Length: 166
Image 1 (cartoon, rainbow, N blue to C red):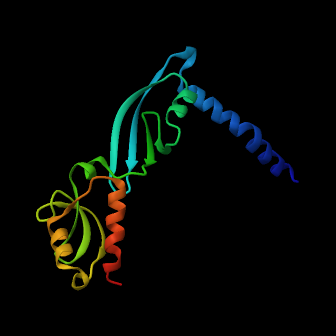
Image 2: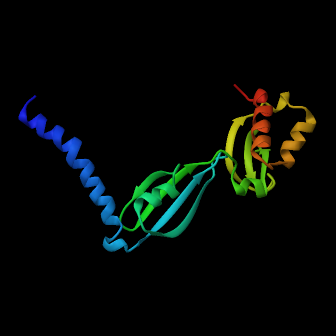
Image 3: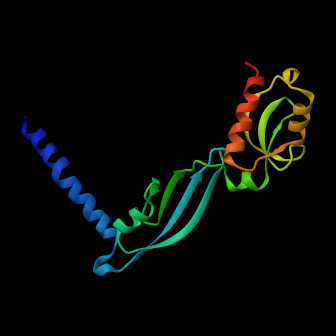
């Protein structure tokens, strides 16, 4: 091993972890004075909705901070703020409150906020072969089917999949 490789190896094993620890400890000011950081919590839901919650955290130790947000992934971090993201295994509160499964005029299965006739589309899935659908299912999709929970959401998407255009 050359001297340059030995130095790089030493820096990687001993100096860098030390620098990281020093940096993390500098975030929590000397003499145990807390620091405040803006924290942005991003939640990504099964239906594709992304929500953001903004708050200010008082941080006494970084160890306690990371323990509190265990399971969250760091998206961005600087001196002013920390952005964390989490994938939720559920549908969004917005969808639970006012979400409908319906069909656009072109036959695309979609999720709407509100009834399909005048609502905003938040997610599209696949084109449906309307000719294969029973009349009552066409009418049901045109009116919109209220989404109430994750299980119903998954079941409905699966139910209409056989009608998709290849």
